[in-house]
Length: 356
Image 1 (cartoon, rainbow, N blue to C red):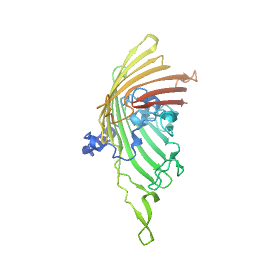
Image 2: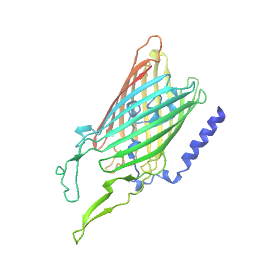
Image 3: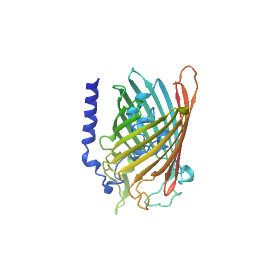
Image 4: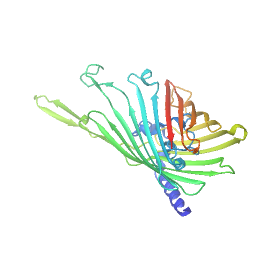
């Protein structure tokens, strides 16, 4: 099994090194990738402390940050999360929201299979054209983004866990659509007398370029002779928003009331955004209540030149409700998180997970 892990580690390292020029942190590349929604974390528990839990994320929400944590699903876990981006209907003219559903099943003694679907909705947007640029004159349209993710995570030993995610991203309107395929991979290493020290690394959105197609790329015009002719534009290929995450966490354990204080940090190297640093704290009481907060830093975060909306302060809370007295792994978890999004309104997220 150690040999398998070595092979897996080499594959992850090669994938991380393959697009070396992509991790330059060049601000001039900002806004040029496709499927940027792949960088939006839809899971409530991890967004509550700015996605800092690369090393210690557990359960279904690990499929976004670091799929290695999926290996800690005991039997079956079902999760749902709803996110109102930037204030939802109150923050944007039409309202943007994310609905995410996930399922994780232990299929082998050391292996877990997971799947989740993330659907991003923008509501009804006004149609504007070259001849009629004023909104409200040509009706509306409803763009739809969807990410389908299939993952497998394996515990190679009690201290080493790894996994991979295969994802399909689709973006559609009434006359234009595009799709892209990407792979995530991640590793976690746990050590310490009580498994209090954890390290993690994950590579996200590694895959071929995507492009759009459809009738929206054609335009019918009339020449000087009164004849109709159609002009079709060639869509440009767009690279996917690859990023590399490195994280560490440490648990301070207290016997009284079974308390825990976790300190975590991460560094993210973005191919098409500025690099990010994050720090976070999570306090746990009796394995029932968790309170967390975090701060995500990016260059110029304190100025008007900030490049990403959801930076700065994040906070959240979770309540684990035991259902079975015989089996402590059966239970219901309720989550809430809030992220600042200056100069937009903040992002709220609620979620629930059922384990049985």
